[in-house]
Length: 353
Image 1 (cartoon, rainbow, N blue to C red):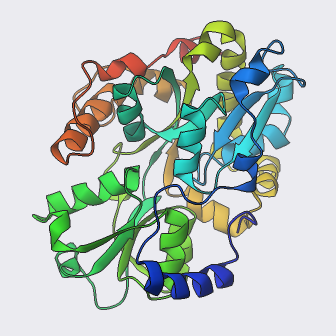
Image 2 (image 1 turned 180 degrees about the vertical axis):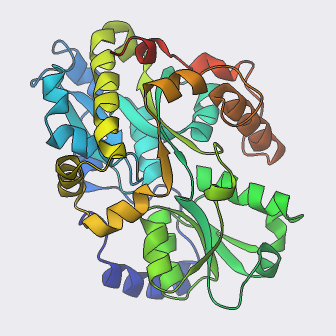
């Protein structure tokens, strides 16, 4: 697995000790070496044109099956072929990447669509310019033996990270089964901590994404609910700061084009592309191929279709609206944005070759 994660044994040992002391971790406490070394991208931008070797487009990437594909794009020279220099900044803790984006430390970010609703309310100026994939089993509720249904979770300790898409997903799972968060002993933990805590037996269940989900399953966990049952609920996207779009639209176009060029190779499991991906992401090939089975990768045609208005989760505007309504109903946001489509920009999808 990726070396920038704690080693599994060390993580389990630490979690087994710390869980009894603290119960849970605060949101965003862990920061990767990559993240801490990231300079303010807005300051760098003042030094010249974005997308050059001297001033690369800084892309924040977090652990998720489709997002790892950016390493394959980098490693096979697709960025270079398209005339753009991109620096990938890796954030093992997803919420840290969101903080970096909102504070202008990165130019673009890999973000789940539902997580874009709250910053829209807060006035963060950005656009979703691309859908990388839809989760189709890459996010799930994993449990220990003795738990066979969602109802069995009553009174059990369940962990995931507050404010993330997994939190929203868990609340929806509970709602679909006639339960609320008050029916379980909910513990706020980052995904990186929740996985080892589950494996150590410190918690009864966890809502996880890949690759942590596969780690938990390989250690004996059982998935009883996943996004395979909720197609389109969790679109994984690329968001870019508005000032970068305004001043460097050609660079954004090249980044989007690079995704479409790489997606073709990733979707067909091209050997050279897969090798470049696992080398950059420091993954085992077998593990990564299993992760890929949990997502539906989006090409240009699928992007053009999902950006259209619709009445089900195949439509990104519909998904954002329903996500906003759900987040409001569960008091995760104070209000529903006046227009959730204000953060969508399909210009670069349509401008690709």
